[in-house]
Image (cartoon, rainbow, N blue to C red; front, side, top):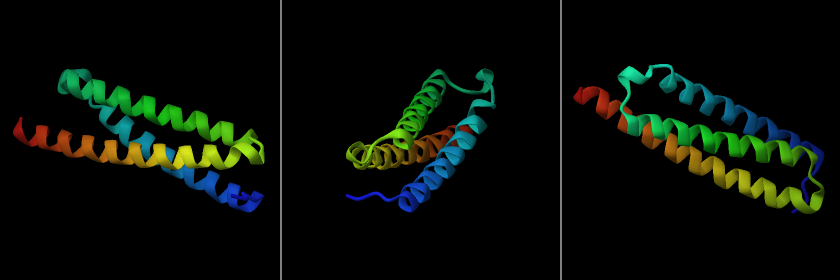
Length: 102
């Protein structure tokens, strides 16, 4: 796959926006405070942050990667973003269900 500069710039902007959105959601739940969140939820928030940090690291790698590596890194980022999105949405659903039950 040939990743030209414009394509990479657009992809980088998209990744940055998705990471910002994920960070905002994660921080929203993290800000609730330990006294209102079960340990399992705290662990899930920590895992979400770890996932986001791994994507952010790959995103930085992509910026300095050569053409031979850029395609693989881009694919990894897309896969990890999809996984983060799924995990984040599942967490939000479980968190809201727990809040309603409390």
